[in-house]
Image (tube, rainbow, N blue to C red):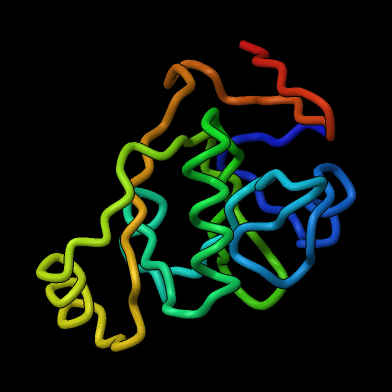
Length: 141
């Protein structure tokens, strides 16, 4: 499937192309995180900053993403069934600093944050289309 920056997709389309779960922020397949699906209502600064909820499963997925390295396609939820493709991102920093977490909790109004993921784009701004398969990523300019 071709994901085009700025275009929208359903979670089913994303799942069909990449695999992983349909209802998680970091879908996983074969032990790898295959993409990021972030809700601006929970992560208003996504994709640059993603707040990691203080639950074992959510923290584990964030750790897997940090350890696996590389880039993942990132989508932001627009409304009920549409997710906008933002581009390819990688982890820049993973923070568990308590003061930083307290600050992020105050900013977001959420009190269940265990960590903060800082992501950065990895593809050239000139690239507007990326073909993604379950096995690899191709940059198309």
